[in-house]
Image 1 (tube, one colour):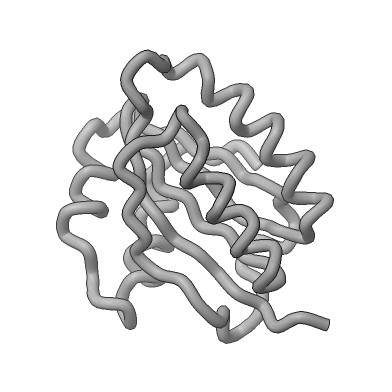
Image 2: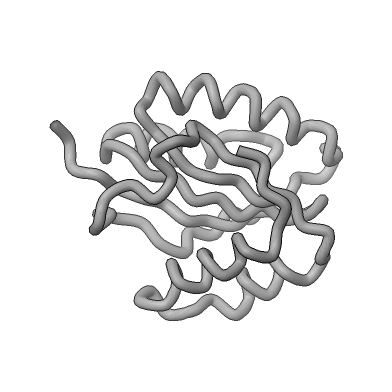
Length: 134
């Protein structure tokens, strides 16, 4: 069994794409993630993405490569990646989805960039401020 890895990144919706494409992103991600044994959550505010995923190392690597090629994402910045200590955080969700009406919330998260030890705590606090749709 492969070691559990995780990835936390931010990006923005690419020019030429609108918020409507996110429905398709979530639908496809849920199916693909089940097949790859990936779980996680995507947060979107109409412009910025923040996504946390966890799964086998090879699956996370494949997903990262796919995200980098996805024309709907721009400015991808990896905040955290590597071995995921402590087990899965989102074991029940192939891809949870959350929205934020606060246009500054994800922007602050991406620009303030907490130090790695505080990243997951900051991410958990952020999830308390958004509308979750598992």
